[in-house]
Length: 473
Image (cartoon, rainbow, N blue to C red; front, side):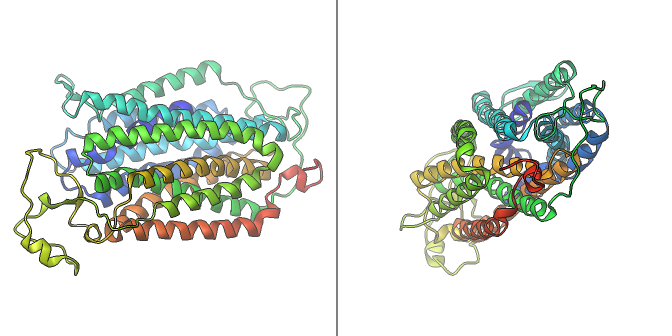
């Protein structure tokens, strides 16, 4: 999980400026599709890898999936080479990386099957902490690679450019190869029931005389569906947040592409540190309050975070006038006379215009989101999201019980992947057309509905063995 998350997060902040560099026809809407393609691939692959892991040694789907990711990262490093349609090559590369990331279902299924109820929350939190640590170091590496610059160096023999955009994916490919080596040398099959007794498993290479049969019983399908919906919304919200960070900061604070990669990388790295601290605290707090209460609390904190992010005041972002051509103006009723009469001289000779593009009509009348406002919101979301994330799939694994969970975990991962598809597309479309006020108001409404759903199914989100009276809660 650590190496996979590094491989993902190491490029997330540079996708937008790199996309602008290699293909001038790409816009913020297409950025949403590029980021969403990762999750589309993961959504398709997760149930397949999960089913595979139910009947075969887990090493097989893990190695195959990581190899796909390595090949896709290499493709990403060459998306600048074709003479045209470069944005579609990037789209394909990110989709294949996502297909390889479908192995998350296998990993969660392994953890759920190898731990008792007593160990489950702590183990899931440890896994999430490793994943969060990967998300910390990914932006840190990206920030370091930003020092290489956009030009970098070129290896003419194989037509490979090593710059601030391609160096991260090459490192991701190397980490993938390292991951395969670790799986081959370290991973062993192991499975226990909810009390910690070893169970018979098709994945075992050798049988044990101490194995017990898996307890039988019906799974609460209402709780399963509800948890999938909760997980979908949680991932949806965070996906749209990480998608909009770079365009939002470039629009609001007139950051250049390089500044956005550097500063947003630092911000996400700080949120990753915060997440690791939250995961460690959850291990202790969940023993006193329970997973359901922590999930509810996390959702409330996320709502507050997005409410804080709503624009207010009378200060407006800098407008990017440089992109106006032939005295054209956007179709807007606000400020047309000012736009027509006012011409902004180019005080500097930078090749890159900065500010909120005037083509986005809302830039002319929507107050800016102050930097302090943005940072406070990021901190709150950084508290709420890790809590909700680990509690949702910990509850899910307990609801499913000791039976093989590969397929179910595949569907959970697929629901999260669907959220990562729709979240970036939703926020890029709404943000581009209507601006941050409408976008974040709609998110606040979604969180309220999610809290309501959690209240309705709250009593059903209990462990399989507790529901069937084998263990007391």
